[in-house]
Amino acid sequence: MSRFRVLLAALVAASFLCGLALAVTPDRPPAPSAAVVDPRQDAIRDLLDRRARAVLTRDEDAFTADLDPDAEPDFRQRQRDLFRNLAAVPLGEWEYRVEGGTDLAAVRLPAADESWAPGVRLAYRLRGVDATPSTQPMAYLFTRRGDRWYLNSDTALEPVGKRTWRGPWDFGPCHVLTGAGGFVLSHPGGEPLAARVLAELGTAVATVTEVWGPAWARQVAVLIPADARELQALVGPGFADGSIAGVAVADRVDARTHTAQGQRVVLNPDRASVLSPLSLRVLLRHEITHVAARGETVDGAPMWLLEGFADYVGYRGSDVPPRKAAPALAALVKTAPPSELPPDGRFRGATMELAYQESWSLNLYLARKLGEPGLVEVYRRIARAGPLTGARLDALVLETTGADVAELVRGWREFLRSAFP
View 1: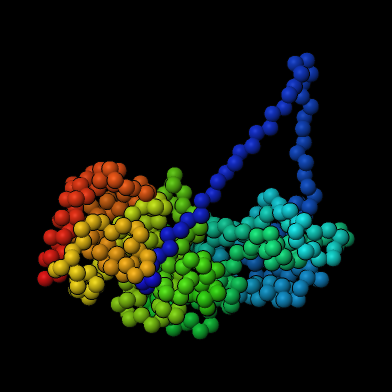
View 2 (view 1 turned 180 degrees about the vertical axis):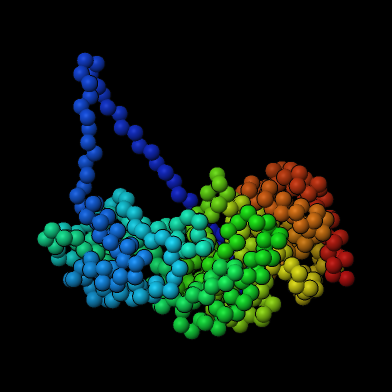
């Protein structure tokens, strides 16, 4: 995978509304009904509210007071470490939400008067970066001893497929460097790369804004994991294979408001730390372009547009000659120039590097042909449409560029011949 491969994955949340029909005899009004309140739920909410306040007020004793005294020592220590690791993180909000529950029939339960596993989600907001909280699942098991409830485990539900989300603070002390464009979070040992990233962050955000416009957060959280295990936790196993240098991630996208939640840029320190200053600059601008445009991007939109546009912004103003930016493409222009728009399937495996270079050059051609505002309009219109094939793609390309797909490809080929003499 190339160093610019980007994750544009968003979780899709579905809401289910359930109605209750009540049969009523005509001559007798219905008796008022009261919702059945599970006393356990109130107790657990109170417990979690205490823990959330303790995080925000930096009260370690309060945070650990509700840990089960008979819980595994390793769990208790990890909770203390988590609290301490959060000390430098700029939190705007931290709360837990209780919803639903888990069947414990297949779970090995601790010795206690009662065990319960309601659905719990952590809602946290990074100050200055998140407009709304990011929400993540927490697979907690609670135990009752006498009349008091405790938090017993965050791993006991794994046998039934419930896993606790892990944030950077689960992997070590968090160091935070703050600048004009946001902040960089790293762990001990990651400070040199964090300093390099912070030095580029403000100008990267400004460059993306010059192209995309001001209608986005213009503040970015860049995360530098400590190791491959943390990288996998933050971006998912499909992209944590060691070959990536950076990934833009988001929790979910609201198609109605064209906004995204929980956006982060995650760097692979093994790859990003050895990049040249120019390559790191291009990488950050590429990923931050995905952050700015994510709310306007529907999953399945053409990769030649999504990745090519991000690379266009990444290389913008760098004075890198086309042959250096796209060496594989340069080698083919004279003998086998592209004959079609790069299909999504070529953005994987051995053909990926060439697909990225073709897409960058295609977006460069569109910027020369339409101007940057025209290129941005092409992105907004086509990326908002989602998956496009055949006649739909042709019609939208014609509307936005003034040429159908065949004409667009012909014009692009001519541009390549002049750009790669």
